[in-house]
Length: 412
Image (cartoon, rainbow, N blue to C red; front, side, top):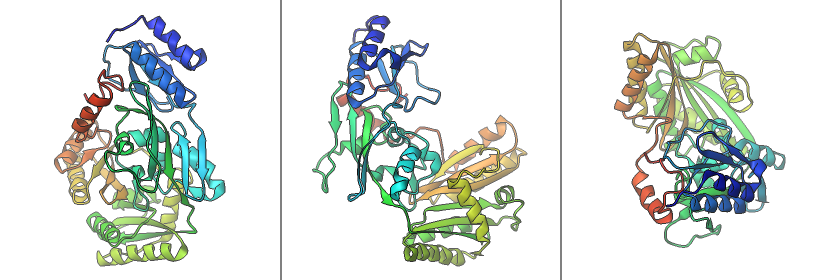
């Protein structure tokens, strides 16, 4: 692969997207903001011909943490790819460019009484291309499943500049599904420019409820009992006693007890049925109904911008249903052994697990001890890369990108 003078590449990028959309980054690279899928393809072709690496950076508003490969770099931002291309209210599908954030799409859909679905708002702050491309736990809801399941078609540019469009049809052809490969590929096999997403009507009713349970273990058991009974809540959160006291004006729970807040949505009868399933599961685990005003506060903080008491959690850990309880106790015990206090809540539930959020006092030694304890107990630190698919993605990238143009260093 032959590298050309940097000035020549900068001139070619300016030709592709306009000089006003090419910004030197100070690390032998340029941040480029294409305005169309055709411009993305042109940027990738020109970058490849100069031996440069191509890195997707979403809307370009966050700091870049990208391994240095010693090659010129082209960072492609999607902030100008922010349009809804088509909205089919009959099929409940929307074709949207990759640079639009989930929250911006929600604002566009809201006047039509439509929604992406009950996904965590913090996830929807990212660009849709970023949500689709990254491997991050928590991109799901108990009601609507994993975000990838909402993706019914993807358009992307490959390393050689070819544009691919996965088919949107009632039945896909047999064989490899490139749309699924692009989801979670972190820009290593293609640059997502747009996607067709399944959307939903806004629910007729939304109900919230709170419950008091004798322990966090009992609360986790109640949640998964309800999910096994096919309840589809729009939101769930478990607070331990210390976290509940912090979040709800010194709400007093017995030592070791837990507070469960739940929301259900849909046609009124279905929302009520889901709430009743959760209530039955709570009772089966020794719990009872609590003050629903607490659940209303929780929901407003989650979706209406009401401030949440700080500070931000010190540690986030993803765990499968069977490992949530061991992880919770392991981190609490590790913090106590280090002389720190610890409080926690658990949310982002789905069939595969949930995320536990821990807040503790103390220095770096406490965080390090808690992280080791979480991993030993079977948890996965949120922010740590998932590596199980790396071999598969390397093999696929070797075929689609033999020169290593797309996001090199991502598997380091």
